[in-house]
Amino acid sequence: MARPTIGDFRGTEQNKPRPPPVAESDAPKPQTPTEEAVGEDTDPKLTETVKEVEKMSDDAAFMTPAEMYRKRLADLKLSLKDAELIYDAVLSKGYYEEYVRLRGNRRAVFRTRMYEDHLRLQTVLEMQKPQLALSQDELITRFNLASSLYEWDGKPLKHATDDDFDAVMLLVKKLPGPIFTVLSRELSKFDHKVMSVFAEGADENFS
Image: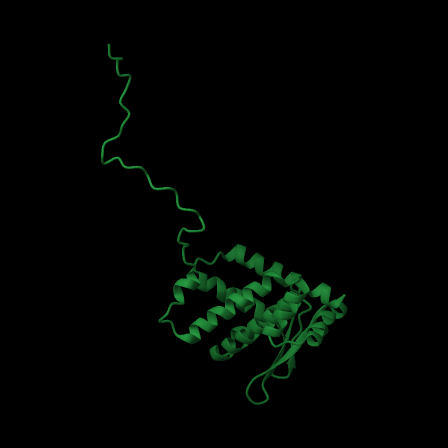
């Protein structure tokens, strides 16, 4: 007597065995953005630029804060000695200033701003609430320029009182548009240099 069939678990002919899983090392790796950008037909100069950027990134990963600080100064073409002079000036006198020369004998003197200048600007921003980014940027630039401008065209400008600041602001508002643009651009460079001098790694280099 034949035994009853419990179940037939054989698959159909189309249900073929699955191929073995591909090892991770054998699987094709996704290309990185730089690999995609640098192909056989890529300009050799672009290829070299990408390699330099990758090398800089690799080098930066192993730099100490002090080394990164010196690299940032080198990028600004600012010597460590000059950076130390700016650093010491702020610590000893409470400010750092430098001349900005324009065409001919025209010149200005920029000085690092005080914290009270930041508070004044913050108060104005909260009160006026400019709706456009362009308006906000112009207001910030105008107040920063008035706060940092300590001499214009050979005439010293006082900043001892709020009335003094208002007088400098009036002078800034009456500047010709192109001159205001030039001074704003120079102030941006000045601020960037000062902030770079006081960036992380300064203490390790000047201790």
